[in-house]
Image (cartoon, rainbow, N blue to C red):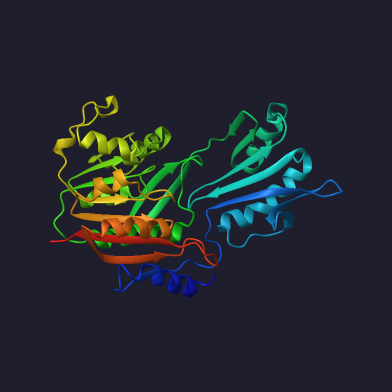
Length: 346
């Protein structure tokens, strides 16, 4: 689906809630995707190829031009080496690329303990971060953490994460999304910042300098570990990360429940003027909507326009939409990300 067609359809979807200008950020058509996952096609002559499913049928492919250029260039090199001695019972290959790094995950239908030496030699020969998985087993060669550098306006921010974290699939659009959020915050009076679903700090790290203090929540322990590490990488000291779900944070703020994970954190000391939510496809549940409606400024990043619209119908009872943006994370598909900035009505 072309970007213009997506824009038209989604403008119509939100027309009952917003009739102002919508900023549109379109993606490069090629070499934009940071993650690529392939099945493996085993030919009758014993060779293997990368493959994708089309109408439930496995189709061999030679290239994948929407993938990051690092992935595209490495695909044939890896395949040639796998065909030498590591193709037996291989059923999947996953690539993850950043501006600074590349990792490869191999998926096997056999005990990978039997081929650890070959895998180690492959990782050393190709100088890559290599992960191998089979049922109940995982081996890592040359590490699995990746480094990323994002340029937000004139500033560069550094990140570290691994491929178990949720990672924005399009680095170009990710940078545009963060810049758009910065533009929404603008020069208005700001106190403290609350972020729900913060992950490893993708937005948090870049936005922290705009506020006195930041409170950020995330349910994944591994994501919190990386978020703390990313604060150190960027010399940021005003963020408090808590491992709570959004529902638990709501309970804590209402004094309905005490959490050991909040020991030493004075929630009452935060004077929150802005809140950012970037929820999963299911959107926000009622308890989270009721929580964020208390705050003056709400920034909502959504990967699902349908659940976003449902949530906005409730949020617009107390807030008005000031800015709206569309982000084309996956070019030439029907998928569209949205950004909405709402301010409490007088």
